[in-house]
Amino acid sequence: MATPPGSPRTPRMADDHQDGQTRAAPYRLRRQKSEILRAQYIDVRELRICAGTWNVGSICPPRDLDVQEWLDADEPADIYVLGFQEIIPLEVGYMIGTEDTRPVAAWEHIIHETLNKECPDKSKSKCHSNSASPTRFNPSDYALVMENELLSESSNDSDGELHLLDCAKSSTSAHCLQSLDLACDVSIDNRVKRERLQYVRLISKQMVGVFLSVWVRRSLHKHIQNVRVSNVGVGTRGFIGNKGSISVSMTIHETHFCFVCCHLAAGEKIGDELKRNGNVEEIHRRTVFDKPAHIVGVPQRIHDHERIIWLGDLNYRLNLSYERTHELISKQDWDGLFEKDQLKKELGKGCTFDGWVEGAISFPPTYKYEFNSEKYVSDVTKSGRRTPAWCDRILSYGKGTRLLSYKRAELTFSDHRPVTAVYMADVEVFVHRKFQRALTFTNTEVDNRLLLGKEALLEPLNSEPGNFLAQVPYKVMPMRCQCQILESA
Image (tube, rainbow, N blue to C red):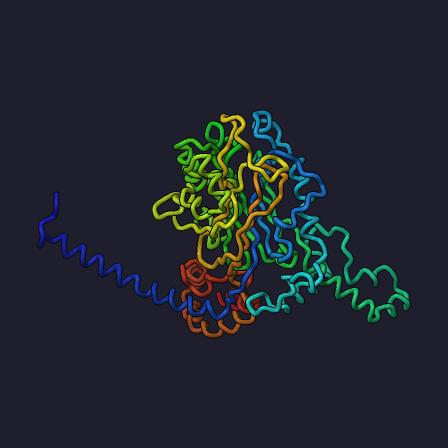
């Protein structure tokens, strides 16, 4: 029953609303203040991310397969996020039996060999790691990292690399020491350059035919934390992994990233796109990342992250006839084709991928080709033909991600063509020196809380949203600050 105007409840509700605004005011002021302080010790830098997706048609690759075009090797990235679909046959025996990991080893070998090749000559190709752009990481950062890593390897994947101390360890003779002349200096310099270009596998995960492998620069590895994986099967019976997703969550410096590799429901009949939409909804609903112990504020869902890249065989088709599709392909009318693309609609407001962004498509449909051929599957048998489509896609979500290129590679190994998207992503970096300087401006706030005792100090300072000290993990606080807080408490 509606409350009549002028009843005692009406002013009570207004009073409660005003009380709520009054209580919220100090929080807003504290948050505004903390954001200003946070800007004083956080630098925003850029990382180059190369994301690639490829349905490899259940074929194990030869060891000498050249994938440099797919990995955009002429412009080395900081992170490679590589998603595969159908790395094994999607048959019952493979789905419910022991997982066949042989193709994983083959693909990882190819990726490792490709990424760890020596940097091309500068006169022929720009080496991204040597860029002097002010938006990139400062070379001094690499120098510090190199100093540490040459003394002590940061990863177990050493691959027999030669380090600066090897000469001194192998011999203590004066001859060895005297041999460190200009020629040796040049050799060391070249070795350091190669070290900068070396990549290590951060994580790899297989779910039946879906496979996601993430590789990073060795120098970046130590700045990545909270790496977690979540698998979601949406295939046979709604949970088998012949279709589904592998998602990886990680924190790079102070920024949360999520990478999703998926293989959605197939089919080009009317209504099949609804199955794909349903797959996406299930992936969002069932993807949950385990919460690390004793860590607050770590994302648990896909949309909790600040930078998200979604790649895979999304399987969305063209709402066009086989004949009309081939006619537009022969004219290279990509805009005309894209108007009938199912994913274009789902990227619209209120649809499955609302808010997600895809680069402009300026290449032919990536599916379905004859194996080891540049020809689409012919229509010799009407029941077996497939209308070409852009099944293989890469999307991004969130601010701070800028697309540099979106293209496909002309590798005929599979019935799909691989697709690559290269991004520059903003990443927030904690600067210890700036933090110490900013901390001097918060002494009054800390001193006031010291009067409240240990519980009032540690609880509010580390749990209140928007608080200055809550923005920084306790372990990265300056040691002097930690000691002062603990002793005073």
